[in-house]
Length: 452
Ligand code: GLU
Image (cartoon, rainbow, N blue to C red):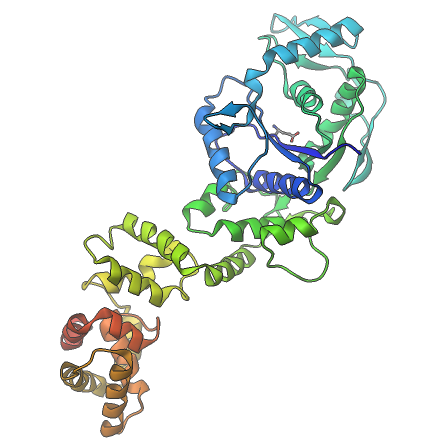
């Protein structure tokens, strides 16, 4: 068996579909599992599109997911991907070979004018031996029955996808073509081309499509279809990668949380499922939460700080205060984009509280206002501003006033944060600091007053 060589061959459409990202991942996993090579090839022969930015979108997405390719022309000390637009001579050579052997011919397009090159396709259906789908034989459709030959070089001289895809897989010595099932219908054409070149086709593994959670086919415009949505929304790349690995593949045993090394170890094409995979947003969200909890504090802080900086919330705030705030909310935040929701009141005094929260906290317990005033004077007299001292003082006051601690804890939280939930109250008060807490307690009645 030759060493495994696989490739991800995206067309630069300006968009990295979640299905494309999953194809790239499966290729990488298979390469790593077998000790093979993972090649990245940009299929950019269609020069009518402006591709530079579109290529960047793909590279950014792959790097974000940690899917490093192994090979490509040297570029700035690293290896870039292969670009089909830079390999035109190779395609010309292969087309010449086909014309010389009589398996391709020039054809005058009378309707549109100009000459194309067509491939002489067999008149029999070709069976695709597929590692995932089994042997697939698709009967020829009506057009193919009438004329199965297909264009391999367009009127403008540009070679088409079928040709360049096969030529590059030959040139790059690809042993396994792992790609989306939407390409299965192209594969008979590809196999015919391999035969015409006298080359043994690679093994094919067409992986199942990704469906929306309602079972419909996930298209470009569907929510969550672009990898960039997850990058921008503050997802942890490892969580997205873990989630994608389970779309159409399932390891033995009921494990779900797997790091890259564990996935590589267990991954094999034999366990890729034949049925389509549903995209379960709730599961991704859960997985994201798991990765956030496990994230090392330094990495959390660094990412969180850059997210917060973009919102302007932390402008002018001392760094150690920001870090203490982040320490408090780390276990609560599931997505970095939720940070403003969890932290705004630490940085601004003009936060708001939901009417519902105010009514629930003070509506049925009007004595809460007086309790808060008493708490204010207790706290004003504290010599030490630490969470144990704040805790003890509040409980002592509750006992003296004949109420449960909760009757003070809830109103106090709403008064200082506007929220019904959050990090442990006494830690929160400690971090907020004496000045903010006292002024918020003093102004609570005024600021939380309902106007009707
Ligand atoms: N450029 C094709 C695509 O983006 C690649 C197909 C393949 O992997 O062979 O769908």
